[in-house]
Amino acid sequence: MLDPNANSLGSWREGSIKSAIFEFVRAVVTEGSSDYVAPADRVATFDNDGTLWVESPLYVEGYFLLDRVAELVRIDPALAKEPALAAVLARDMAALHRLGKRGIIELVMRTHTGMTTDEFDRIAHGWFERAIHPRWRRPFRECVYQPMLELIACLESHGFSVYMVTGGGADFARVISESAYGISRAHVIGSRSALSLLRRDGLIALSKLPELVSFDDRDEKPRNIHAHIGRRPILAFGNSDGDLAMLEYATGAAGRRAAFLLHHDDAERESAYDGDFQLSPLIRGLEEAKARSWNIVSMKRDFARVFSWE
Amino acid sequence: MLDPNANSLGSWREGSIKSAIFEFVRAVVTEGSSDYVAPADRVATFDNDGTLWVESPLYVEGYFLLDRVAELVRIDPALAKEPALAAVLARDMAALHRLGKRGIIELVMRTHTGMTTDEFDRIAHGWFERAIHPRWRRPFRECVYQPMLELIACLESHGFSVYMVTGGGADFARVISESAYGISRAHVIGSRSALSLLRRDGLIALSKLPELVSFDDRDEKPRNIHAHIGRRPILAFGNSDGDLAMLEYATGAAGRRAAFLLHHDDAERESAYDGDFQLSPLIRGLEEAKARSWNIVSMKRDFARVFSWE
Image (tube, rainbow over the protein chains, first blue to last red):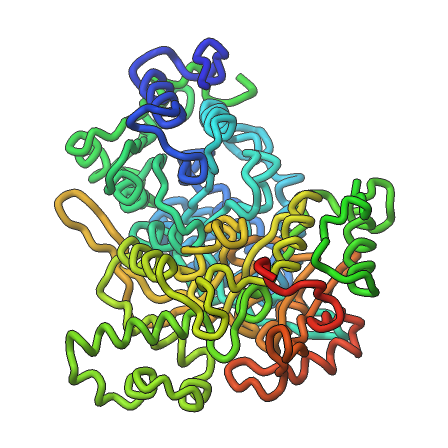
């Protein structure tokens, strides 16, 4: 049974959002309640970029891409002539934003091809070990929102299965999902590249191909949630229009359900943007939230603290 | 710590296979052992048809298809003119076997189109409630191999995450995975049809399209395992050449690993077939097993009992 006094959401300010979370969890875990949901059906899905960790001015995976392209160009300087790669090399944020999320993910897939999934895992793991976010001057894996970690832990302690559903590459997010969020690699749903089987000397590996086979954004999120989990979530949390279909799916059926959108409105402690963030804007979501009684979480108002290091 | 005296594999006969299972589990769960595997990495993948439940003379999903097509033809008799559907209607086993597993799965997808995943779930659930296996005269969900249920339970009690990786439809297998095997719907990986989002009156559902987007057989099994789990299994269990790539993947890397193939060699208690089973033959597997030291499980020799009702 949920004990709000346990203060498991210590980094959330008292207010309507924190109350709504506690009220929702209490309702679905209380046996005999008309809103009771059996543990197996307590599925919660969270977007990653901008929901669990920072995404502005550039996705974490975008910074990973910058370093990767610089390395590739050191090996083969001719690559610098390609316009998209030249923009990456020049760290031209306007050009990068014009690529959109899909364009960035496609470049990540394209620049990590011909290697096995194990090799990619090692490369990304090594990068997370040493790379520092240029704005926060902290390792990227620390640039996660403390209130969201507490919410995930609160849900899991109440029998929820928590999944990450990211537009970013699943292989990339899995490198840090367990250490940064406590979310199992198997609970990461994300964009995927094609794979081929590489057999050598009785061993077998999966080789990453440049082709993006699933861009896990917008309508693809519910499709991938069904393919992966086989159950409709009862809670979904996102921060951009790319998450709307997931929120619609979580709330668009009978029974007690809840949806949340994190609004980045805290220029002082983090960032303030919504419709103007070209990579992944939040425009329709703010209207839909009103029409559908979804919860708009204001970072400024509802987060008592943003990062763990504060 | 594993206690072989607990006799958790009571339906397995004493012998080299039962010993190999106990020895493998003991090795990977013993801290300090050179073969120790952390719980998060204890991933085991099981084929379904012919591995966990019966598949001869026809897949369970094939019988489901027979009933479905009969129903569709009652509504639209013109359908009976289509050769593939006519073969299904006539219960022409030779013609059905010639369709192969893929052909049968494609027909299941084609004959369950224009309905939502929730509707399919209800249809399949209702079918399992009333349908009886014509050979065993038992509900289909009881036609599972008791020793395999015990093996799954044994692995789970030792910290393994157990997944089903079936060439059959994931939506179909999920209907009984929890009640028949204790395998969560989220741990079912299988063949999938395309989905479209159906929005109506603020609700949203996933509509099944006739197109097969992933036939989860042969090389597609390791690809789907990676997409879904993000970890390489350390144990894989199958029964046909369609499972070879999964067994190669589970065993084709460093560390302690194990692979098993169930050989249907028990005409008296179940069935005796391998290379002659046209739907899903076992030919190369028997050779590879010798070359790679995989375990061939003889139903006749190693199963003390086949079904729970014996």
